[in-house]
Image (cartoon, rainbow over all chains, first blue to last red; front, side):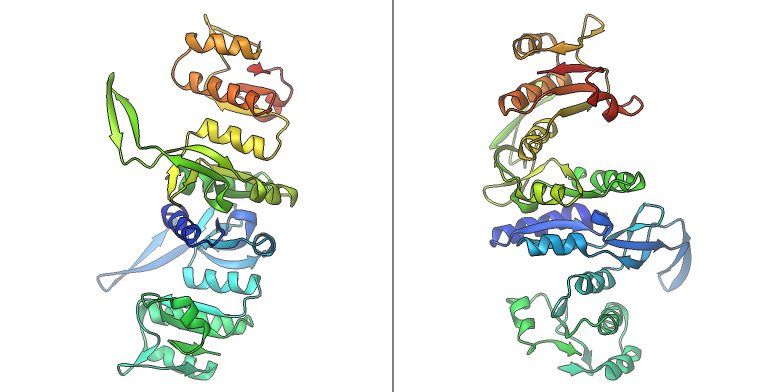
Length: 189
Length: 189
């Protein structure tokens, strides 16, 4: 749960340094992200699959946006760590990309920006500037790992009515402002 | 910063388990607890004093209760980890007892309950049922360690207009309900 502790606090402090009134939260707070705890997860280690039981990870099933909206409407910027609460009231780790999609939906976001360490969806060495839903679904077969998860999350965002989605690099200068222009990375809508 | 991560999240989950709508926060959030970072702290190790520089701990100088009150007024129960924000916008560790006093003052608390692992202020093997300010000040010389810090915090609470203060055991059954009767532990006012 380092995400809820050190990392989240560092982001909150850094935002304040830039004059942004941040509030660090997790999906536990206000029971914002309610998740079904997984019975088992399959981990791939050195190419071998391994089943892990008793792990505290979960899949989001219900979202309560009241706390997030209360905080936003009062001028604060929530920073949400991907930890949910299980039906048994235990903290559970969530997939960060999908948690972000549910947060975006809960606050009726006008855009979903997914920052990563590459410049967007790259096929044959080139960044694809835009994709519609069908194209994004097709491209899923051609990409792997983290980008695959990001495109999955983008499709889930579209299904929940959150769009456009921008997948772009968080390592560039002013990545959020750039993403808002829809002229950087890969725009999916 | 384990207090902000694991411990705070565990308390929040446990409260939800008991039907209490909790929200985990730190003093960073909403810049609630602004602290002056200490240049150095003096640590006592095996009876020897040691000066530590570059430590991230601080002393609260300003409090902004707006976020806490917003959360309370909307039916949530804030659980605040003792981490503040420095004037340089860094996270700093705070003394937990004193941070609690400032939180109590910010939310205009009707009582300040300080839970510990003994039954109250104990002198000559007996729990003192009540103390006024002058008595509490005198007793400071007779107690050490953690209890000394708790009495200091109690006096700070009185100075800020927060009273009564109850110092009692958190290991008993229903410690909060008991403390509210003012018939357990040591009541300072």
